[in-house]
Each structure stands twice: as structure tokens, then as C-alpha cells.
Image (cartoon, rainbow, N blue to C red; front, side, top):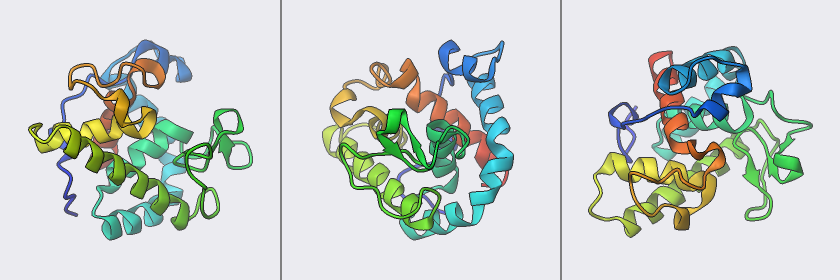
Length: 185
């Protein structure tokens, strides 16, 4: 499957912070922790595999990246209560924030995953416009960071995760996506 926004396997990443790794009481951090977190979500993620792949094809987005976001945002649904997370502010597998968007579809539906993916693509395009000289994969990673904290938060490539949840959002999400890519997504 071709992703027009870049190759997630070519994006450099430092992986999960110690704070993020503590979610699963991991004694490692970095890429190894992100891989473990993704692995812990894998059985739940397989439930949504067909939807993720269908949406990925339709939106020209790597299904592994969608999976990385779902793993990071909702732990493939495990962190949600009646489809809601973030103290009732965000909805669904991809945690669409009701303060900025009107969530569409059921929390685990194709409609929801399509909406989340479109929001991601909008942020990638904003980062492409903001940093036209960045390589494609840097713009892709910047869009992933912006999905969490907005495009105004992305100011430099080296420090794009400053101000994101855990201070590691794009790095952790990219590492999880790389794990999912190697494991059938």
C-alpha cells in the first residue's frame, strides 16, 4: 500500500518516554518500550484491522500509522469508557477531541477511523505548508505530532514533541507504527 505522505519505516524515532512506558509498568523506554506497548495492544488491534486497512487504502494513508495512533490514543479501545477518553473530551479509537471537531460514527466504526485519518492528513498538509523545505518523512512526523498538540506546537523538527502528551507523541506513535508495519498492518 502506497502512502503518499512518506514511508513510516524511514522516519527516525526515539520511541516512548519513561512516563509513557510506565503505562504498562515497563522497565525499558525508547523504541523498545513503544514496541512492547504496540505488542500489548496487538490482539485488540486485530479486531479493527479490516477497517484500518480499508480506510488506509481509501485515504492513501499507511494502515500502520493509523494503528500507531489508535494504539497511542486509546490502547485499541482498552483505555475508553463508553467510547470516551481524555476526561470525556475525546471520542473513539482515534480520540477525536469534541472541543475542536464533532465526532462522527460509533467509537470503533469505519466512519470514525475515516474522520480521524482525515484530521491527521489535514495536519500533515498544514506541516507541509509550514515547512515546505523539510523532507517528506519529517513533514509526515510533524503531522503526527500536530495530531496530538496542533500544528502551532510544531516549531522545529528536533523538538516537535515538546508540548505533546508525554513529551514523546510523534516519536512513540512512529515507533508503534513501525512495529505494526512489521506485524501485518
